[in-house]
Structures are given as structure tokens and as C-alpha cells.
Image (cartoon, rainbow, N blue to C red; front, side, top):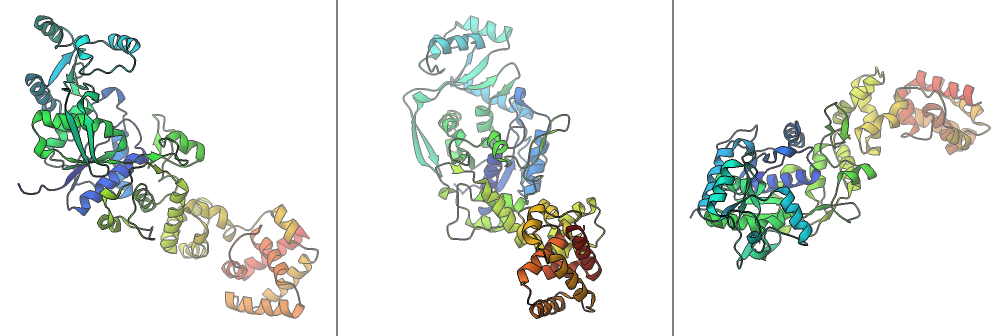
Length: 505
């Protein structure tokens, strides 16, 4: 038999915003598909109609567009294996439900929610399985006439998979190796619900993977307990030869490593756990996203790629294309990965350093305009070139750099107390005269002339520069003093210096 073309899938449920753990799962599927010259399929698993949330599907697609993770086929992308929404595949699933029933590998259960709840009260750790199904109301225990009457007269019944005891189930996992499980521990999962004529995840997942010719299933660790059941279902259909290989990824853990990462952790510690902002029906943001918080998509991808896997070596910065040949699914950690959100901030800072001043200035310009900046983009770019190494996000530039465009209206009290000496007013008055005498106000000439003046007067360089910085900036921050004065120009520099003398005395 010729080797099959690699086909993987990412199949989220449209129940709300996409968790960052799901983004990592999609990313690993993408890297695996690209590495093997295969296909990445985007499927929507919406069989649970009670949990469907309007807008969630569009949100997921927009998130991947922003991140640059491209699908080859699926919902909104087209393809030859559709439809790719499970809610549109009812008739397909019904055929396979009937096959299992006819082959005696599934049965119909009529137990009401109240009866199941009562059983759970009565039996500790109750599980509907080979040991307990004989005590329940189903087509295995009821007379045929009663079964027929209930099937026709009610719509609250479900179809359950009949797990036979005494089998050893082998799950061949690319990360965890061979996992052997006794079939007795598997419960008779519900595969189909009559009331909405839709399958559950377990059946739809298997049928879709088979019909869409999925060769590898890369998904979160939380699905590992269902893997034995899925193997049994493949065997029940006689599809052993086309069973995909599994890879169950480690969980993303809280930053302290104690438990699974949740939205509450992000809210508490101030970092996003979703790719984009999620809004309620009134348009209020109920969950913050990486995009709106100012992260670059390539920084998020780089950060996520190294959570639970790394290529070895010292290099940490990788583009999506660079990750493809390096990625090795078998080298993923079995243990959960701590979500070190500070590392995500570090990555964003590194990408700011990596990008040109022109790129960052183009991103920052709209905010400058909102603050009334009339300077040219070229001037804004000059500021970015001086200051971008000091920020992790573009949004941090304005509070740090506003003094380049707006003269200070007040002076930081703490800095003034420390840096404005008794003789500062006199010294800066003299400095103004030196600056006024300059025909060449370039950075290099200013520095040469002012330093010569300070040496001649035997002033302390630090005292002069610290007071001058306070005059031009309003506080003790910013790049080199001559970088600032050269940018401001002669007139503005002298004007600001004289005003500080007047205000601070």
C-alpha cells in the first residue's frame, strides 16, 4: 500500500473565544502539515447545539488570519471533503449510527436524566458500561416490542456504543509512545442524540477523520482519555488500516505550574489567554486578546511554538517558516508547560528591536495623530529610532516619548528635588547664551561646544545635564541630551530651558 498524503485537522467548537491552548494546537498541526508537505483542514465541531455561540466561528477564522496560520481546506476555505461543519453532515452520521446498531456494536438507551442522576446518587463513581448497562433501560434489557414503541413514540433516547470487556486497547501516541488500556475502563459513550438528530463528538470525530482521510490527529492532552474509545470505534467500523496516528499535546499550565491555564489566571495576573478581544452582544469586551494588547502575531507564534517543545540549542527567535523544518512532534514534552507570560512580553520586545524604525513608526503614527502631533512621519521615525529599544509594545511609546512633541507643562517633583540645584537656574541661563551663539545646532557641534564650556567653567557635567534634562523633558528620562536638543531644534530647546528657569527658579 502506498504511503498516504499527510492530512491533519484543527476542529474547534464554536462555543466562544478560542483559548490560547487551542491556538498552540492549531500551530503544531500547521507545522506538522507543512513539514510533511501535507494538508491542514479546518473543521467546525458544532454538534452540541446547546453550546453554540453566534460569532465564535468568525472569531476563530479571524484569529488565524491575524496569526498567519493558513488552512488548505475547510470551513470558508473550500475543499473536496465537505461540508466541513458537522451540523451540516447529519445524514452522513445517521448512516454510520445505523451501521453500528445493525452490527450489534451499539444500542439504544432510554434512561431519563432523572434516572441517571438517581443512579449516580445510588452508585458511587457510576459509569454506564459493560457492568452497569444490564441494570438500565435500554434495548439490551427491554423487550423488543417496548423498544420499538419507545423509539417511535419518544425522541429523548440516545444511541450508546457497546464496549465489549476483555480487550486490550492499544493507543499508539507519537508523544507518549504505546498506551495500553483495558476496554473495561471505557464507558458506553453516547454517540447519537435523537432529539436533535446529531451525533456527539465521539462519533462525528471518527467518521469525519475517516471520510476526510485524516492521517494524524494532533490534539490536547485533555482528549487522551477518549483515545481508547476512538480506537475501538475504528475497529468497530473495520477501519483499522486507515486509523490515524495520535499525538496528545501537553497542557498549558498556570504560570506557577499548579493546574490548567484559565481565563481567571489572565485576569488576575494581567495577560491575555485569547488571541483577539471577545465582545458580548452589546459590544463590551469580556475577554482581552493578544492583538488588541499590542502583541505582534509573529511574537505570539514564536512564544507558543516553544511552550512544550523546543528545537534544542540557544536560538529562540524563529519565523513561522523557520519553525517548519525544525519541528518534531515526537520531541514534545509529556509534562504540562508552564505559561510563562513574561516570556511572551520578552518576545514582543525582541520583535520591536528586530523591526525597523520605519515599520514601528508606521504603526505608532495613528496614536501620535490622535494626540495632535503635526510632525512628519520622518520626524516620528527619528523618535522611534531613539526610543524603540526601551519598550515592549508600541503603545508604550507615547507615555515615554510625548516630550519630543509636547513641551512639559509641569516638572516631576521628585526629580526636581533631586536634580535642580541652587545654581541650576544660573547655570542654564549661561547655557542658553551658549546655545544662542550656535549657528550649527547639529548634535555633534552642540556636544563639542557645550562640553568645552562646562570644562572651561569647571561645572560638574552631571549637574548641568540632569537639570537640563528636567528642563527639556519634565522628568529624568529620555535618550542622550544632545539627541533630544538636536531633535527639538535651537528655538524650542532654548524656549523650554528658559521656561524651566522661570518656573523652577
